[in-house]
Length: 445
Image 1: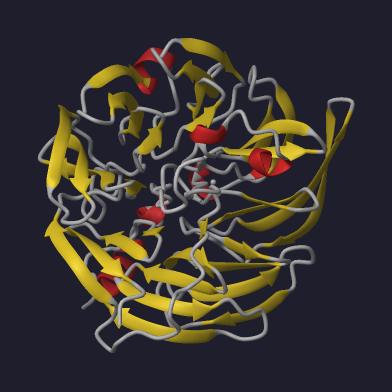
Image 2: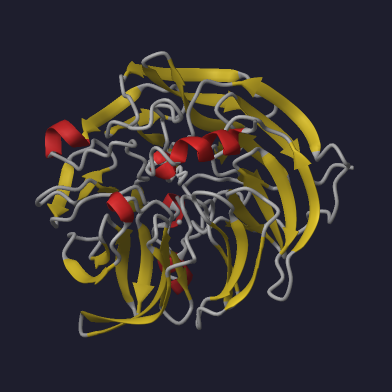
């Protein structure tokens, strides 16, 4: 029996099984580049670019924080066995995504009761350094889901910013792995204790890092990047698993956060609330990352009978108005990534039972098509193609086509609960499950 069927049998006993992730991201999600913070373009506000090579994947969501890459030369077919494998190696349990900077990879995994964050040689997969610390944690669905870590380590300047399943955050020297500063969001700030594991990704902004924490007066917090000092803290919402997103609404910078029962917008300079809109999620399990599109359209989606919404935002004189354009309860992104191309979005819809690859008109909510063929999946955009990795470990290449579902290539590669969002650096693809990490060359003949 494959992993998916095993989980479906268990889900009837426990509806919460797949929900802790993230961001990985959520897997346990979904979008802010720290290296171009002085740029003044409007593009920076909604999906900041990075001054480093476009092959770098420094932050959650990649160069433009939306899981869309600049790679446009992927082939339209692979050999039957799949793309060329460059290397593979065993890796401890966990769902942490893979960051790329130049010739170095960064990720996290589990070793016994320890969280381990590591730097690897991108050419060989060999370990360069490790940072480990004791961090006992039992996931609410421990018989099927491991204790993390769930969030991807992010490269911010000369630091690596990490987060554990128990709300511990660290700022490490990316060259050596030495800890510079740390905080315990649960113990120090009474943050929301997420029983499926903390999986939020920090949002670099100016000289600070914005974290979703939860709790009274601490729901959103900003820490100074250099030494971890608290810059500000604000709001009273219950935290969930989604990653915050920096956007621009009619000239005003805002941070969007999908919390447990609502989506909110706040001022990144002080955390002041700018707007909120109800989005009550089953058991507070909001995981996937929001998508922001031209026309000030914000797309959010959750599983557990919650569904998807598109909101139109406008502001004048510092006051933001929110208009709900459409709502579809049946369209449910669990932890997967959503990819936008033009007026259409592509996502894997479903969390318990069959998953449907779906194409939806973002402005109207009209479903262009839905099709089976893959288990619940994570997506990347590359030119006119989607790179797809489903939870059964099947890798696919799909045409981004709003009129039909066209699979160009498909190959089984991984085995154990492949919930981690893949990373694409040029044509090099990095994928992992709960047992191994693999490097592939999608362009090799």
